[in-house]
Image 1 (tube, helix red, strand yellow):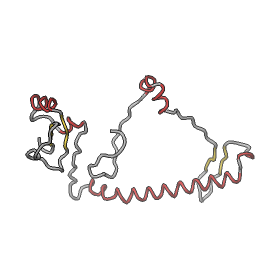
Image 2: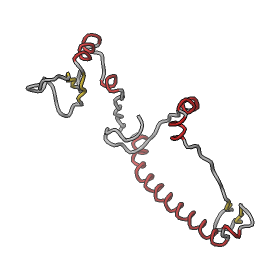
Image 3: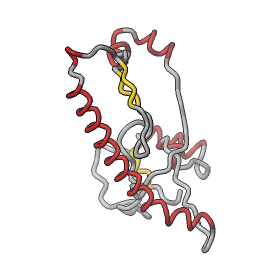
Image 4: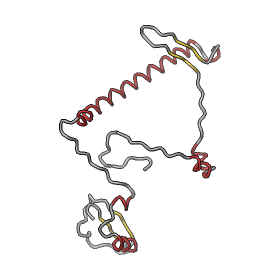
Length: 173
C-alpha cells in the first residue's frame, strides 16, 4: 500500500524497520489479528482513509492564466483588507455606543431605542437595548444527553481558508 506503513504490535522489539518504511510515512499500529484480517480481506484495496477515517486531501492544479488563478491571487490581500476594515468598524461602533451611553446613562434612559437621523456624512442609525437568551448546550448535553441528541442538528458547508499545509487543525472532524 503506497504511502502507508502498517506495523504489527508485538511484545518483542523489531530488530530493523520493515522494508519500505520511511519516517515520513504515517504509521498505523495494528494487532496481529487485525493485520491478518486486513491481509485476508483487502490486501490491495484498502486505503489510508479507510484505516484512519480521514479522507485524503485532493491537490488542485490551478490552470495558468485562468480566472481561478486571478481570484486566488486576490484572496490574501482582500482578506487582510477585510480584517482591517472589520477591526476599524468594530472600534468605531464601540466608540459610538460609548458616546451614546455617556449621553444617556442607564439610570436616565427614557427609552430602550433611539433613532439617530441621517446626515450627508452618516446613515440613519438606531441605538437600542437588546437582550438575548442562550441555551447552555454543554450543561444540557451533560445532564440530558437524550434530549440533547434528539434536538441536535448537523449543518455542513464548504469552507475556504488558508491551508495549514496538510496538518490537521484542532477542533472537530
